[in-house]
Image 1 (tube, rainbow, N blue to C red):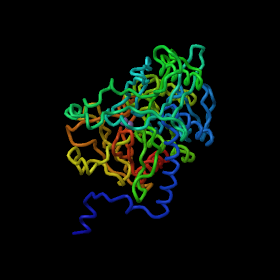
Image 2: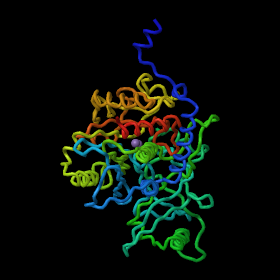
Image 3: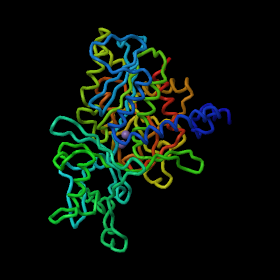
Length: 460
Ligand code: MN
Ligand code: MN
């Protein structure tokens, strides 16, 4: 009967029971590099910049329209410094389709408003407008740092990074002391801290002179010394306040990684390493690091933008292939994180279908809400294709559904890839505390996601 059970039943195993010591060492090495990357990639711009630096070290060159390309060539397209597409040209024609993996490098955060700075009661603040889905109460009383750019009237751009280095000052949003929070504590968690209340404290020492707004004047003059900017320059700036925590190992056994922005830089990094490691692929491999996923993949740097199609069309034209012919034969892993089952909140999950940490790469056949609304819902054949590739390469994986039916929902770039007539499936790393300032992933799953993407790129 046991044999029969083993033969006929689907049973999941903890990933640690499935790998040997050598594989575990590779997993640790991989995660050490990921921790370094994530620590230095706090925004989409920084992720793109760091990815380009690593890609160039691996022999990738910036694609120039009209460039002659042969099998094995490695090129990238930098979309305005905020999104990136890399390709390794395959032995087969693009008429056979490409193998695409698409992740996003934007993450929930607090953007500074354009008219951002104000002083009240001799304290100076930045006003913010949050980006992406956040639980606002999580963003107060944590250290924040500032990253971004200001575009000046003379056409130049200044990069602004404050708070990342150990000796640099950080910023914070204050919260009410419990002693005076009787009224606040009666509010719902959605109302206790409001969007307009997310104002970042940036200074308190007044300028040594008379007159109004002396603290603001002192802060502005420090900013002017550091970056040469004036208050008006904030109007054409993109400044993001992000958590100032370092990425670190979590657990006495060091089996997990805590940090800001795992969603979705953990999959972006997996793709990146995979496209670096794929050798002489049969079909052209494409790696996308998209922007704007957290706000619906809109905008010129989001996955709905024609920037991706333009790059792919250029590659196709060079081979005399119509883009639509390439797309209809292509395969895409929408590499995005998925919800990990949390034993502290079992009520929102359906244990059999939710992904679990340490059980490997999570495959989401569908996302969406209610009756799968807003999902591209991959076909059985597409899931079967991945099953075959993963079995060949020893990729540990699991099915992943985003919580109980009717509990909530979400989406990824998958539907925008499917809209292009590309067979697409969501797959990625299970995350605990997703969209929190400090998210949690398991090392094992990070490594298996890298192996999963590599298996797709290196398809046999
Ligand atoms: Mn995501
Ligand atoms: Mn997200």
